[in-house]
Image: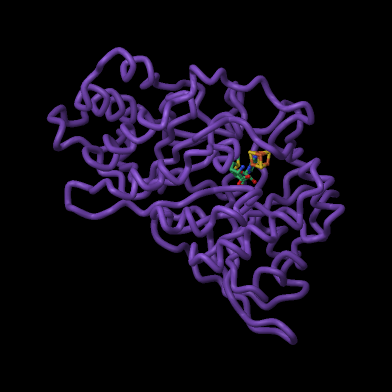
Length: 345
Ligand code: SAM
Ligand code: SF4
């Protein structure tokens, strides 16, 4: 069982994994409507009163970093740049220290809209890196997928992040059959040319109901075959034990430098055995897995005056029961009630 003395707590589960990477969702709202993530009309957003305040977000981060062994904090959403106080939150989290006295690594997953104006301030506040979602390099195709014509703003955000030193800038792409497979090669060329690392994420059954099927998602093997038509790839393995992307070295080719490309094969080659994530939704619910059908409410005790030790014990105790895997292949698999943007991807 997990230890009960606060200073010895860690986010260990009964399968021997220890979570050190916190995904903190700052909002469930978004200014895009990517087809694989949200319905065109959006979702019923959380009431503001239910959303964690800045102080509550920072307190949970402090408990995670100061007591529970978390050493990486990633802000996500919905679209985290919609949180106007993001720079203040990043600054407060950058001031936290692990029990060993080190500062957590702080990163952001964003669609890049508005980043052009905020990248320098975010860097100044202590943000280390960004992952920016980019599903097409053709403007019309981007607009078709995101349901908003915003590709130039995203590229401006990518450029500003690079100029501000939020590097390595990683680009995240979800491929969908019959929609943007033909963008795989141009996207990799775009990333190589600019020195970014592109990572393809297999589409997961976490979007609007009935939009995912085994036939529509493009599995890792097929993504590699699409890329191999233009690039020479050599497998490198994973970044480290818990990194979800399997990496390939891309050889230089006429007109293009070499680099690396990653594939996050959550569906076809699950990496649950190496998972080191713990998640907090924008309304303060702890989830051990993207696919969890249960959540642990930390907001209610937080607002009822619970001590940091009480919250840490609740978080660690619930983590102990983290399931071994996401179960997509199990008979009777049911996706969670909340979709990706409401969980925090
Ligand atoms: N709005 C930000 C963004 O798009 O980067 C952060 C939140 S978004 C939910 C985080 C990541 O999840 C994005 O890279 C997005 O492409 C990915 N995503 C969303 N729905 C997905 C799905 N059904 N399957 C796989 N990835 C998905
Ligand atoms: Fe918004 Fe990100 Fe979902 Fe696209 S993937 S709709 S940008 S939350």
